[in-house]
Amino acid sequence: MERGQLTASSNALTVSNLSVSYGRVAAVHDVSFKVAEGECVALVGPNGNGKSSIVMGIAGLVQRRGRVEIFGRVARAGDVAFMPRHGFTLVPERRQLYPQLSVADNVVLGCFSRTRSLRRAVTSAAHRQALELFPELADRMGQKAGTLSGGEQQMVAIARGLAADPRILAVDEPCLGLAEAVSRRVYEALARIHEAGRTLLIVEESPVRALQLATRQVEVRNGVVVRA
Amino acid sequence: MKLGNLIISGIVTGSIYASFAACVALWYRVSNILNLAVGDFAMIGALGVDNLVSVHHWRVAPAIVVILAAVALSAYLYDRIVLRLAQDGRTRQEGIVVTFFFTFALSFFIEGIAEVLYGTNVHAAPALWNGHSLSLGGGLHVDRAGVLIVAFAAVVGLATSVAMRRTMQGKAIQACGENFFGARIVGIDNRRYRRLLFIASALLACVFGILESPITGYTYNSGAAISLTGFIAAAYAGFQRPGKAVVAGLGIGVLEALLGGYVSANYADTILYAILAAAVLARPSAMGLDVVPE
Figure 1: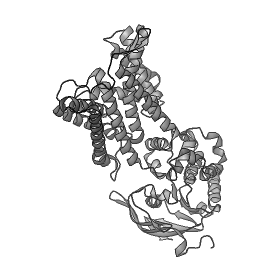
Figure 2 (figure 1 turned 120 degrees about the vertical axis):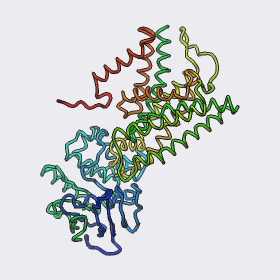
Figure 3 (figure 1 turned 180 degrees about the vertical axis):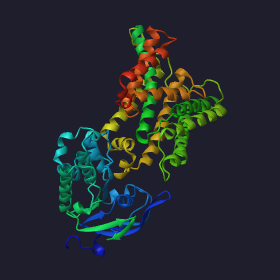
Figure 4 (figure 1 turned 90 degrees about the vertical axis):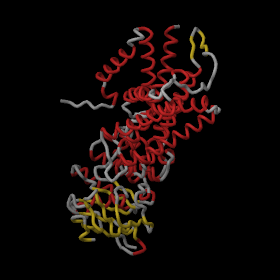
């Protein structure tokens, strides 16, 4: 099957009538879209229009209404472990690392959804591959994550996401606040992740960079999908 | 000989501080809430076991089991009813009110219940290891209850320190305290950890109360002073590392004993807190306080 081709049987992620609210403020209204396995989809739109709320709603990190299916399984709302355990990992906006913990600890915690054994986590192929993707981090493993540069922190966040061995990796604003050279490095890593066969969902304000990698875009405006 | 006995006495006292500091730091690590009711769980342990044994003529072992079960159930219910309401609602509450108020209120509540149930007299759970003080040679002595306290504090300190450093669960606990949202991203259920550690710290405090009360005796309002000692020692570990909190508690206990023995028994506490305050001013980062440049 050609990458990017969407069939009913190849859906990695199906989002149906997803709504997200923060108190009385509705951020996302009845959003529906599908992502096929192996696809790279860009979720684009201006800032403050609900893109991050959509991926956080999919990940189960905010209260949501609607239905989210991952590889045919209906996600349980309110269970934060469900999506990582079933192959969906989010690299969130602003990284959300553990600043006082070491880089090594940050990355290994990505394995939490797969194993409770630290030994099994550090010897797993997914953990090794996540670190191999960013050789820049090799000398920084003992350093506190909060002391790294923005680009290095983004690498740690992506490595943490990959350590979960996800089939779908969602990356929210991967280049936010990063210099152009670092952004290129981050996208180079995302391209390698995609080439390895993982499904990617990239959230970007600007579609230009995302569409260099993405095969399709889902455009969000005012909390509504205007193009899928 | 005097120095040796003072140090032994300080280690026993310090182990008590250390134990409650470990309980405070352990739960703060996962919840960012200071458990100011930890001493009240200790008090309930001591008074509850004493009541069942001396008033209702139970044997010691079943009395301890029943009180531990009651404390665990109470901690569970408090988490499910109060803390869940405070932290797990649509808008998660943070800040000074949540950090202090929710367990401070619990402390008053437990005190009130204890006063009604056990009165205002001094009580102590039966000593678990009876007999004269143990002689260590060279004129050095230690109470048997003191040996139990030091041993239990060492086990708790070592176990929590190793668990934090060497296990995935320990790292997950640290992640919860570092970044609530970041922990949930990797599938860590912060709420479950908060509940489990609240119950665990209540049980640990309860056991320490049972062990310690034969030495000091407890009343219904002893909990606040115990919580304060734990709070101070935990503060020296920046409320972050239970293992470091244990070391801080031991240090404070030994320093207090030496000041009492060599400087002034009456002013030992005053001088101790002056030294602790000076140490904070000299090295604020040790308490996890950020130094903001002008």
